[in-house]
Each structure stands twice: as C-alpha cells, then as structure tokens.
Length: 150
Image 1 (cartoon, helix red, strand yellow):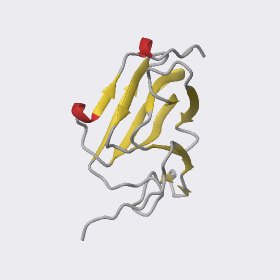
Image 2 (cartoon, rainbow, N blue to C red):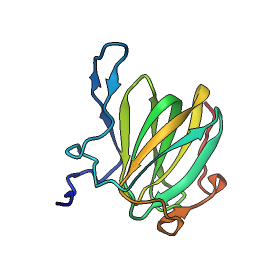
Image 3 (cartoon, helix red, strand yellow):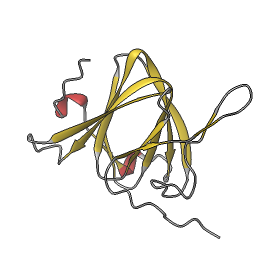
C-alpha cells in the first residue's frame, strides 16, 4: 500500500517537534507520515554550512523540503515572489539544534540559508523527491538582493 499525501502545507511553515525523554539523552522526532508537511519520502540528506557562509537561491518545482538543524544554527530566508520582481518580500527563520523545529518548504518558493551562531550548522532535509538538478531553479546570491549581515 502506498503512502498518501497528507499535507495541507501550501506556504513555508515552521513546526515544533516533540522531544521524548529517555535515559541517557532525549529523542527528537523530526517527521512522521501523519505530520503536516509530509508529502512522501524519497531521500534524506544532511548539508553542512560553515559559519557566515550562504547557499542559495534555489526553488524546487516538485520537491517539498522538510528541514531541521541537527547541529549549530542556520538562518533560512524565503523569497515570496518571482526572482525578477525587485519588490519582493522575504521571511526569515532562525533554526538551531536546541530549538527542535522543522521548516517545511513546499515547491515554488526561492530560499537560501546561512550558517550562523559562531559555528554554522548541519541541516537535515527529508524530501519527497530525489535530488534532481532538472527540477531545481537556481540563481546566484547576487541575483536576489538580501542583506546577509548578522
């Protein structure tokens, strides 16, 4: 039996994730098949981002990204508009390993991210599609003006 799409998430959304007490350390649940933001599973990967470094801008045409920071601190910036539109709006999300939150980004939104907090970070992405450069629109950081200073 296949998994059904269960998510109603249509815009980038931040979710708190449960923390389960356990002897010797806690367990942090990232994503279950019943959670809002789940669109199926095809790939999970981690990305390391050094402190002060930025990656982006990218827009997935099919992939829903479920992002959580498993080490350090990372700033995610979402762009709400066509990249050629100079009057766009941005939304910023600051995630850290200590917060235990998941950022779900559905297809169609440009986003970039930056390692912060003096140590950078490691980001886990649980995606509903296998990474494919053909389904990703990528533009350079300079093409979408944003002030990355902390």
